[in-house]
Length: 261
Image 1: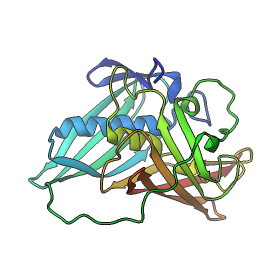
Image 2 (image 1 turned 180 degrees about the vertical axis):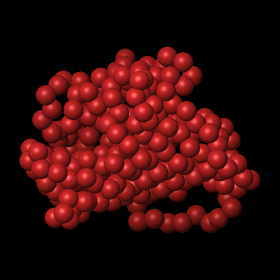
Image 3 (image 1 turned 90 degrees about the vertical axis):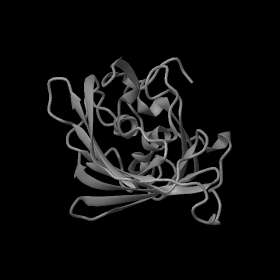
Image 4 (image 1 turned 180 degrees about the horizontal axis):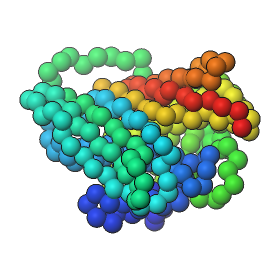
């Protein structure tokens, strides 16, 4: 990994976003992947039980998350024996809440259910799967902090796509990303890899993200098999099947706000 991260830690719940968090729409705003992962990280730490696994996260992206300093606050809403509910929110300095998450964690137990055979993992590409990102007018951003390899489609070809992604930089400085972090950094890219509209003529921004996981990924790579539907009235939906090299791990969904530039 490069000697840089998405965030620099200032205190336990205080962070400064680096230019690697910048999204493709505005150099002043973050791509939603890194802040989603930062909120997921906070939930894992707040619940603090090794026998609990995050099974569902629902993110509301209330407003663009600026590239700057921010505070993450968390609380446990319900701490049951088998199920826990936790909430976290991200507040930029001097601004209202920009993003929040409600997470459900479910207790695990070894060999409590028989193993299920899946169809297998999507094809893993070689170096030839690398495709250019949308043209971005700055050299450092989310587009350079992630590695992309396509087995179907591309950023510049409209329609469904299958893209493998991994982090080039850690989420937080001097910290190894957790498996949940690796999923959440990537999952918000479903609408980008499977866009059905010309990015030069339209915005297609997601104000939410929901991720369901039946297991965490093994290894650095996460696969997004995504497709997008858009109504002529400007409301859309992206659905993404999430996998690692061993097979399926879960699903993600994004509502879309669509507008002409």
